[in-house]
Length: 369
Ligand code: F6P
Image: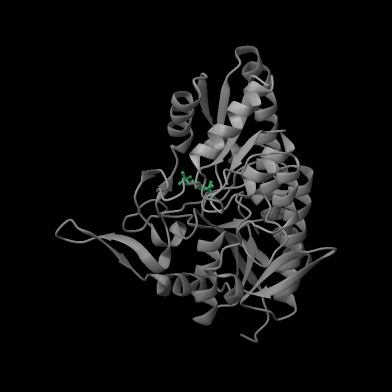
């Protein structure tokens, strides 16, 4: 691990988030400044593990000139995947069954063959868990926290979250007038997996009347009573924000698809179910809007761009200082380093006694409990 860095690789993994390109730009600039060459691995680690898809340029050279103009763009120029975990790679067996295989050895071999001796992994919990294992196997690795869900531990926030909440707020703002004109209940389903950060921040920011998050299983009777009380008090419309991972008291989460070999379960569908149930129970018309992947698109906000660029530069500084097995994290007013093993496999839920939940309650927002 002690020989000097000459070449580094960048990988973007998991669901895309606004700010990934800003990180790539920042890493490349900071690396070239130190005389290092940068490479990007295509589509998570598929640039190495899927030669059928990337016969020639699975690991591609990245220069300052190439990335100079990408900082404001959504998505990732490298591509990404949430089906390409090299530790549990979906492999079809001769009998047609699909099993999970550990192919991490091929990553070490491919990078070594190109004389690349450090890796920057940009991703959420899944990617950072992979990064931690690659580090434990002897690779020099620094992680960068990314996810619109904001559910990564040990960092104040992840880039992508601010942009997602800003857009969800704008969408919800627009629903107030139509909900009010029709005296309807509008249910807005937002992403966030098993954490309620996006729902809670959007709901507070966009003046919602109820917010349902995974951390607080909701009582449909209490939610119904809140909406009926609003109606009786002369407020004839309501906005309900529901996190895709929310679930009723004693009930199940709604899934689009169960987990299988090489992929995790897909949440979604609760918005429509809830709208139908609220219509039945309140006697008011209810409609559902699913914001879904719209929250992952578009240009990163200024906050997310700055966080992303700070993370990218800090990752290069960390490598230069000899660190490995760490994630750069936002710890106001600074960026600091935390051990990947303190982050991997740990989820940051909304704290129920924190001020953000208390704020929602003080604003008379029903949280379903
Ligand atoms: O983790 C980011 C995220 O957008 C989650 O909020 C959501 O559950 C998931 O990814 C959706 O993934 P996919 O792109 O596979 O539908």
